Length: 499
View (cartoon, helix red, strand yellow):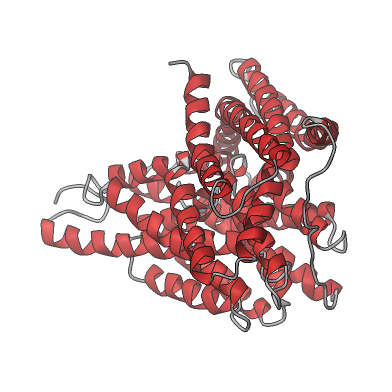
């Protein structure tokens, strides 16, 4: 099996469960117009092919840039260079992240451009760049991950007191979406590159995790600070009720593709130019990997154009229509149940989740088996989306009612769970909130909020990515606590080795 065919298989597994669920609902609870269904299926095909090519490009081009950069920065031993590179690459990688573009586009559409797409992308990217730099400095100077996370989430809790419900939802959603398929491999590669310089293998392994966790807080802090400084007042959101139109099936694809192609070119071009300069001056003109990396960047560009065209032209619209029509049935059990099934499907089908479960089984020498991790994550994320549907239906139930106790429990567990599990758990929020959450599930929630009287599409429709991203923090740390207890009984150290 070729590498590309393997990636197509992975992408197909991610999208197929959503397609099957839509077809089931189409023939039962929420029938679609023929043209809508046809566009959805074509959009799904675009997403499968685009995601596969994009993931191949990330593996071949983006991740190697991160690892080369991390290793070169560590060897340079110049903190000024570490800060400059973290700020620059953090901004550029975040600005090119497809999940962030999808979320920002949704915010722009729902608010009628009161909160512009470029505003969200720019502010979030600034926050990501600052916190990526803080995370790199932490690794270089051996600062405790638990201490850094306690300080950062303490700041988030304080700022949340002054943040409106709508911006609270957007800020946590931005954190989950910006750590997506482009940013996470790059950030992890940088962390591995910097941590690999350390002499202690245990310290190196622990420091390989946690950078995504520190970096993702930048999105939350940046959006909250923007909300406080700009004081936008009361902003309500809305989405159009999508009806069948007389355009040809391909018209939305032809309309979306040129705009997407230009946006992605503008996002990826700076990464290319900075890499070429970085390769010439810091890597002494080494040419071994340059050709391969350039090909990888081209794959990333081509895949992103296909992926985002499919999302905008046919996929997300159907998610909103499904959510709207099912919510109009006024059956809370049905809406919550479909939310739970969506959660199960999205996490089981997410390739990055399977990679995570294999990794946890490996570092615990099989004490925490992948099936247990996958089952816990599936139930947790299913419950998270189910609760999100209840939050939309029940007036007076707000996002912070879930996020506050969830993050408080996470910070409490952090004090007693092995360091390795803390890093893995806080890194895994972006893994769980993958492409299907940022596209179909988010649109489904917005459609449901549109249909329910008293619900706000902006304050209630957003926040679902935040709920999904929070789940692994609690779930994986509880498993880490279980592993800690079992390892003490079984004569195994917390790093997985025998005593």
